[in-house]
Length: 300
Image (cartoon, rainbow, N blue to C red; front, top):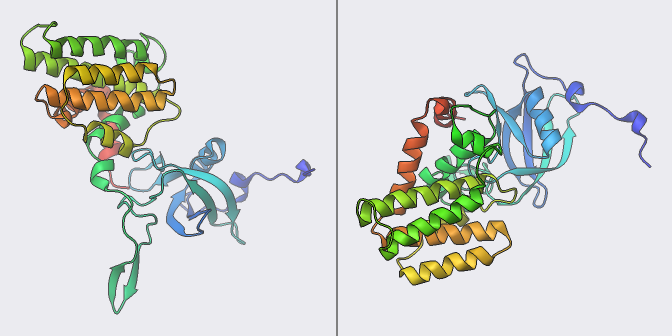
């Protein structure tokens, strides 16, 4: 049995530089490849220890950030190893979704110096354009909003904090509205405008359901389901929704709904990404999203 009397406080033990920072090397536990080098302050390390997910201090943005908060490629702590002088830290991690570099590569060290030139020695694992697209920004914006204190002026904020209608129930209600438009039984202004409005509503509640999931689908999975969907008849979309309604795993359920929404958009002559951009533009126009815009636009 471990002698707890010898337990140490790693946060207090480590030696930070004059800026309160500590260099951190992150290594993949399975391959032992070095993934990246970044910095932590005391709070970032505390969050890493308390959550089991790697957090860093961004020197450019002057704030703590969760590695993978935008791409979904979070780093799960396996081991922490301080160096002999206690002024740097090695963290061994598990990558649930490989690709620690924002370029799409497994590691940030994907190039080698050969004859005076940098040569890429590993291919990227994902396309950054897919991961850091408007869709990713939109989901990241709703996720950011869910992690802020409740904003009284925002109904979305209240819903994300449990005060309001059940997003899953509202999502199904909006699906009935959208299906009604596609079938020609639900008419307000006209087919195209009605379809755009109802698709916008379905997207909104789909995003909120995504944020409230503990086990979320990856951005690539959502992108593949939503953007890569094909035009189908209303009956086939209704069939997809019926399958989603019967699915008990909410992660899988949501992916089915994403595919159905992309398919519905194409049937109505809508570009799925235009619906995303409309929602993103509307959300970012809110005064309370100014801080998110500042964080998202700042380099890391």
